[in-house]
Image 1 (spheres, one colour):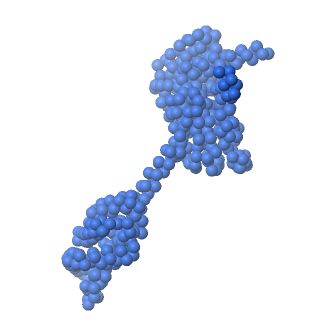
Image 2 (cartoon, chains in turn blue, green):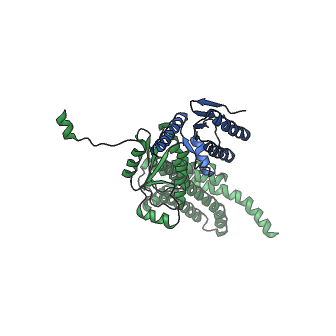
Image 3 (cartoon, each protein chain N blue to C red):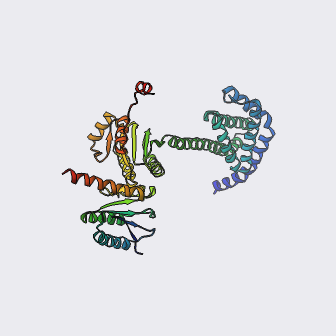
Length: 126
Length: 296
């Protein structure tokens, strides 16, 4: 099952459905990278609200995805991690250390906007 | 061979003897029970009980014990002991009172048997063989029931204390405070984290201040729990500030090599609130009351 990717202005939103498999994550990565280039996206939001488990493979591919998207010039925010999932993840040591996280889609969009402002401020400054 | 015969005879004789003992104790019920109550009163074991309570309780205990002796079944004793332990603990009776009372009853029965068989020592010995295991069994049932009841109360109180001691407070829009008081073990750490995560979601918190002023000692395990809580909160998009790490705890943590550099730590709660305000973009301005009054 392909994970759908929505375009919202300069941002891309991918909502992962419950029961997404490892192949779905790999496919999402390819699709997203292609789309980031195609629409010149500045930010990517991955919504995992529906997931009741995020295993090591999923966390690793999310981490890889964020790094790759970064190389293509966009920021990634993971949103909607459930409290139980978060707890299970830290117990397994999967803390996603370098990835931005936010409570939900709304917060994720705000985070991306803030980052963009910061970046603009920096470029204006120099 | 002779020995086995003896045993077999003992068993059949034992059953007859058992009935004889039961009959004797039932016959002597009133005088023995009175003697028992008297002895307990003399030892001060009945403090806090009314006359009526002493009557009914002593009759029930006496009959339950004799019943156990008659049938060699202990269910009724078990039920009664659990029941008594529940009431006893509730009313603040000490274990000494209850177990002492039963020891006294054991002695009363024993004396009475000794009195009855004093001319026939072999018969007395056989009677004690039947009687003693029953008495011991009843005593251990009661003692265990009592201990179990105590443990139940202790467990219930532990749960209550845990729930009381981890409130999550909202001080401003999107700012939560979690003051931790007392020892953090892994069970409690888990509970604190789960509660915090639920609250982060319901309050849509962006910043959380964890204040550990009330935690008596922070060792590497506790620090590990804290790091986990911080990481979990971050996965939900909240930033965590840890405050109140005492100077000596800071020394210990650095000496034993716990790495807390990833964490945002602030000296005290006041500093943590300032930091949180800064993160959320609040500024606290003191209103000059004299100036506003003159303006108004």
